[in-house]
Image (cartoon, rainbow over all chains, first blue to last red):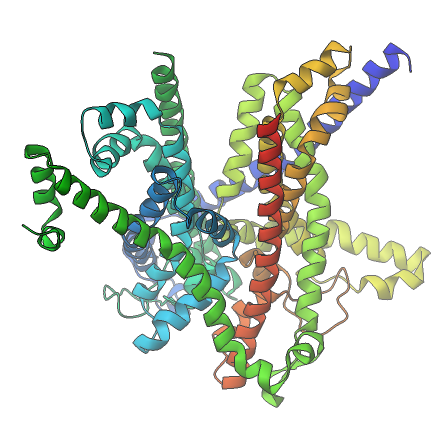
Length: 289
Length: 334
């Protein structure tokens, strides 16, 4: 093959891969633009202050909104985060700070497996574990489901962040006579703080966008409810119900829910990206000292 | 003070004691308390994974004993009113949508990964990586929303109807194979499914390409290879295991993706599934039937669908984990 043909082939591959990239990026941009444009048009003050109510409420033009879904999302997600944090962080610490523990290989593999498990199955488990014994759908059951979802993600990100934290830090602490648990809690965790926070935020964002597990646990409802032992509404799940409903008014509101959800997830994602970049730079500096 | 007393103390007091009087015994106690707690908490992942399998099996046991496992996965009828529960249509729906989605996502995802890792200038590569990661973070209900109101109606009017009409005029035998187009159908759902798993394919391929040692590229450069030849001769073969593992993990994602399919596939429980007609997958059936499953056998059958899905994703995930371990070990050896 002549050199010219080899270069030509190289350029063809550049073209093909560039087209592949465009095929991925273009629809994403289109989707985001659609959600932004339609969502902004559908947003109003009522959206953030009123509850949904029955379909007739929207059809007769009375004010409706999704304040109860937003409230439910915040409560369910935060509660899930608090439940998942100790387990996720603990597992991550175990994997990185006790690297010789015999349980580590199975934990690592199972964390990966749970991470790849369909969220809908997590909903089924939470139904059997929480909803049935408690005798009914509840916001609490939704939190448990989302916590199950977050734990393996937090565990994996915690492990990878702690692993890139320099060993010299631990050695310095041990040389000062600190016991291992103090080294972990007072040196390693604070030093890798921003990386840990990033991982937790990514897990949070992922759980916040999930609708499937909540369908069988927090169930959803059209009115404000502050009691977590009863059915609660949440944005992703409400978005699904609105989109498949037969009412045009509710479709409008679905776009509004879409923009709130998308902006929320994108904001978390953006912040996490910035924090990660800082953390990487910080580690880089320490390694070079 | 005995060791048992110590373990009853508040963590803060232990902390203070450890600093002021660094007696070896106290320190050992603190370490023991901490490592016990950490191991207990870390083991929760094992408990959770085992509990998932056990609970799903327990709750679907009635279906397997009443209907039989093989009959359940090979039966084509699903009619809860008559107590008929065969999940073959959903199994086929899931496998067909996932396989086609993967077949679309693989070349596109690998292409995007090669472009961002090898060809694109750094700033462009950063933007591409950022957007692809963002795509992974977009909630599937939001993509489903766009699918329902924008993509599905557009695809039916602009693509499926013309194709169907063309078939009517030029190749009549094709029409019954395609089915007259509905707004929500298996093709639309599969296309969006492919779009949703691309970020996983792309990110995992990118990681696998990055794992290939620089020496190996330099060897090819040194022989005078072009960029594409470097990729083809030294990078892609070395990254093959990781790319295959990435494909498997994407496949697992596709099998389990729920909301987009539940929103767009049209939910038809009966075979045959035609490209332009509605169908159903295992997750979409779980979403649609679970809340209405009041009868015991109906409920356990929905759970049984979940159990079969669990086993499928488990096998795929473990295979992928095995491949990735081999890849990382191989990279370490080089």
